[in-house]
Amino acid sequence: MTALTKSLLCVTGLPHAGSTILCELLGQHPKLYSPGDVSPLCPTLMGMRQQLSRDPLVLAQVERDGVEGHRRSRSAFQGFVNGWFDALPQPWVVDQHQNWMLQLQLLQLIDPHSRVLVCVRELGQVWGSIEEQYRRKLPLDFPNSFADLSPLDRAERLFGEGMVGEALRSLEAIQDHSAELQSRLYYVVFEHLISNPQEVIQDIYNWLALPAIAVDSQDSPISSAVNTLNSNTLHASLEAFSLHAVPPRIHKLIQGNFRWYYNLFYPGLLSGG
Image 1 (cartoon, rainbow, N blue to C red):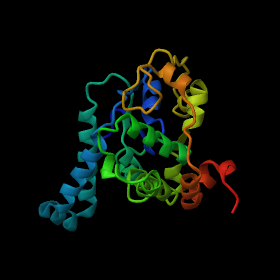
Image 2 (cartoon, rainbow, N blue to C red):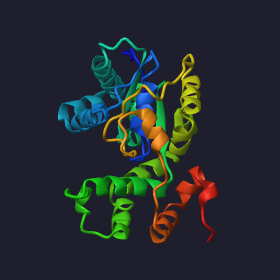
Image 3 (tube, rainbow, N blue to C red):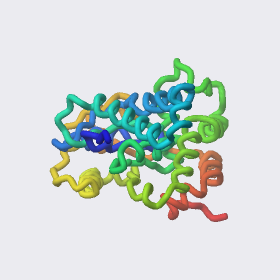
């Protein structure tokens, strides 16, 4: 049976919840390869699975011998992942994509020892971060052509059929997985990461059984895609972080629609009712 030559650490979670900052910090460890970019690996594996599932020859083989068909398919996925990371010297590789939340069972099949970091953030601040990014790009349309909507209507769309709502549905579905699978998840709270990056990163290193190192938040440039306050370095971004102002109607809408999320991650912030 094919075995992975690297250990997978997948990063996923909500948009604008610090995943890129997290990957930049993780990349300081000499045993971790973390490029800091969103990776095409997860959607590529999803496409492979869809192709196999539609191929009549593959389906015929599975019908004849399900055990052998399963073994071959699993080995094919593992061989592809091995080739993907073949040239890297580090034993751990960080792979960032939001869809890993939807592919936890496929990930477990490919690598039973994989680990997953799930980034979360107070939802009003997620909305504020997206709105702030939009205001900096006002000549351009909002994602999903939401530019002509009011802020409240944009919030309803973003947290409904938009990118935030889609991520929240994936996050809620995680709670239905087995306890064994969930034990391989680590939730990274954005506010903790920003206020105390050293503590959060060291705790992740401990969880991965990696030796501790000193994290230097002044020596890690971040991608311009990270929605922090006009900063070119991670250190400045962490220092510059401040709360976004969230209108009361939008705050009430978000909390009312996602009480399960606040109960899980921010129970102290729930309003009465």
